Length: 241
Image (cartoon, rainbow, N blue to C red; front, side):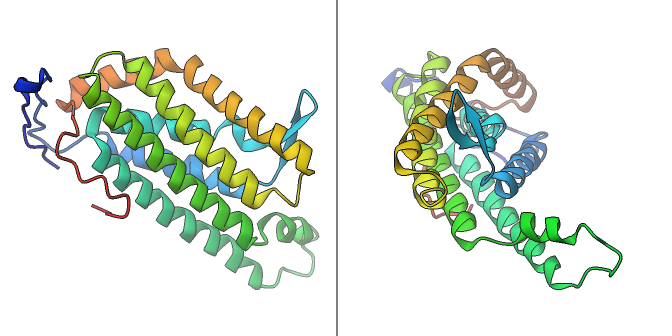
């Protein structure tokens, strides 16, 4: 993939660096995003306690998808991030369908762990749909806010757009997922506390990981030869390319 050079010096913006060779790391980054999303799909309904508040266990690793989304948007631009989101959603849907479909094959008579497999991998349409919807809405919001802030702030203060986009994206994601998938799992009072606790912890992960994010962004910009600014991007979230 090649990026065309978009210069807006009249607006005081920095020119976009042109990528003159195929991108080296975008496939690996996409694969990592798919991995964390799939694991979150299968474990999202498991509740753990944090200071007496029930939250999804995915709070421990799902925020990595937002770190990935931040890095992709910052380096490659919103359109590339949107593409990663759609690929991840397709893989998540396929993975859930396969995991549910394999249960239709009878287990061997001597296999005494089948009940556990049935319980873990029995597809829940509500949880699966909620997870996909929350992931899509949250990630799109995250990438949109980051891309707009980068143009508005002319590429300065990376930490502000990383944290601000995560606050918005994770807020949308957590609110939707808990509200749709877990409203029958957690009592109403605990549900709100769970949303606030989960949201807060995810943002904390973003802040704690800022040094790592900075290092990855610098490495990718230098290695890939691209630093994309979304001046003329079509922000329609339903475009796949």
